[in-house]
Image (cartoon, rainbow, N blue to C red; front, side):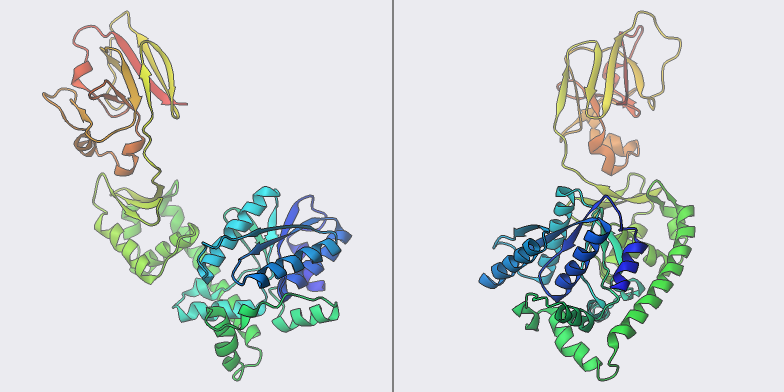
Amino acid sequence: MQRIIAFLNKYKIFNSEKCFLVGFSGGFDSMCLLDILTKLSKEHHFKIIAVHLNHNWRGDESDKEEENCKNFCEKHDLTFYSERLPDSIKKSETAAREARQKFFKKCCEKFNAEGIFLAHNKSDNTETVIFRIAHGTGVKGLCGITEYSQIFGYKIYRPLLSWSRQDVEEYCKTHNLTPNNDSSNSDTKYNRNFLRHKVIKDLKQINEDIDSAVMRLSEIAQSEQNIINEYLNKIRAKIEIDNKIKTGSFLELSYDVQKKFIHEFFIKNNLEYDAKKIIEVLLFIQENSNLKSGKTLSLTDNLWLFVNEKYFALINKADKNYDELRIEGEGEYIFQNKIFEIKKIENTPEKFPLETENYAYANLTFPLYLRTRRDGDIINPFGMQGSMKLKKYFINKNIEQYIRDKIVLLCNEREVLWIPGTGLSEKIRVKKTPLYLVSMKER
């Protein structure tokens, strides 16, 4: 109990006005944790809510476990919330983990919770580290499970990480707790069960206290990771601006440091990765480092890596926006996050703006339209005879590929007339006296 009190003091949980969730499967670990937190919450006045996800893997057994959890909470006057996964969810460890993460995030939002307590113990850390070693982990993977972390914006606390599985079982026995006994825990077709019942059991013939040995390894690895992070942060300060990494400066780094940066890039953005994916990304950066308009590499359905000669960055390729706004005459118009204005001009200005500015003098004929680009768009570039495809025009102007769909255009029914900050069509150029001043600014 004293170890848990020290943990809660460390993270300033006591006397908090915040609400905290407890992941409650009803097994030994989570029942032990919930029982301890229930007692301490009543003594130190912080609120906890037990949340249970019924994975629906084992039919009646899963339902009985949910009912046991509910009964435990009713007995101890605790708020209990549960959900049941549909039959369509794939029955795999990966799918279950992803479903739990989504469930916890949803619960944190529903109850406006500060974070969630999970009941991982020292033995869980051993399984995690050995599993990662089997998959060729680096130093980061050897750090194992941490007592505090954040994912999807919510905080995760693991007060039992210094407890062994035996400590947990002894607590449950001493306090007359009756946890659920998940029958699937003995099924060695699941990776963690195989490690627990086969691999780790054999390793204990070499070192009976393998959990403590692996925990020491994790602590050493975390210390090494801290040193690496300190070194990378110093480099990052020189090559990173506004979440963009300068391509030239990055490629001046040693090959091993480049790989480490990409590794950290995947971790920072919570992306799935392996050694092959890291090399693929690194090669993509190298091969496209001389492109002016740049190129993108798909990482997930919505996230892409953009690379050009200046920088590389993670971008979100949202669906293309097909909205448009019809303009019938003078006035101020709001479109997406832009403010567009048309004013009639009475006097000829002494100076005309450059194409690269966000205002222009033009001779316009209504109606006009504000929209983003579409397939087949053309423009008659200022000072040129004839039209060209807008895509080619963007390439000639070195407009980065990933922002082209976000640029707001002024068009008539057939073609692009003005691209703020980029260029004007010959079709609306002022020959003697301008009729209108057009401008665009951020909303």
